[in-house]
Image (cartoon, rainbow, N blue to C red; front, side, top):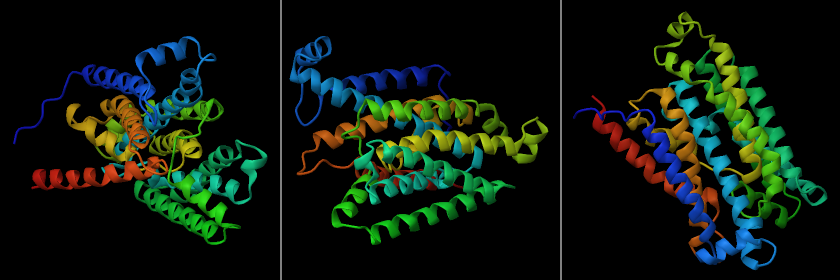
Length: 333
């Protein structure tokens, strides 16, 4: 079987950006109640004079913007981590950062802090992500293997804390609220959530975007990368900081969302010649598009209660894993 010829460098990002814009526009029209083009135009031109304007400006537009930010952060973080760890199954949750953000948010729900201060959940979620990232780095310094093992240990520890919080929930309502949050959702998110998370997400993505040359060098091995002038410890610290800021902030506002960071780089890689640096931008764009599509699915699939975003991405991720296994079996010697 001949290898797929890589596309020119600009084609895939442009195509992904066009598809992302198309899906973002579609997300304004589709939902529990579909809007016509005239409703959308009238709502955007006179947002305070119609119900359609209220739906667009206060509900669907912030939801679309947050989906783009979160999906792009997950896709870019997944691409960098797979290049850094040289592991095709690496994703942002491998370092325990996602679970740390979940623990912080659950603490806010457990003690009812979100009723006193509405943004307590994302703020404590961000703090939890930073603490988990610091623990992973503190125990994982030295090699890629120790970093992976430390991340797995921190992720397990954070999962244990989540189970403890559910086990000792002060009331059935608190347990339900914690469970619902951990399933992930973009519903009831406002511009305040975007204002809180966007600076951290963008700062983290800016750090991760500089990792292209480093992950290219790491394909040759750590010793060879160091001989080319890259300090591996510095690369790990910057990656951990970038993932902590971007994914931690994303998880702190929308909850746990799986498979986006794992799937996006795999879908991109065959079209860029398997060069790690060329997967970064397309993975971010594709991650944003995948999360937008999943969010549209949660709105248009009619159920008694809205289907949670993390549930839908997990359902879509399982067939992806089967496809990946079959593909690896075909190319394995």
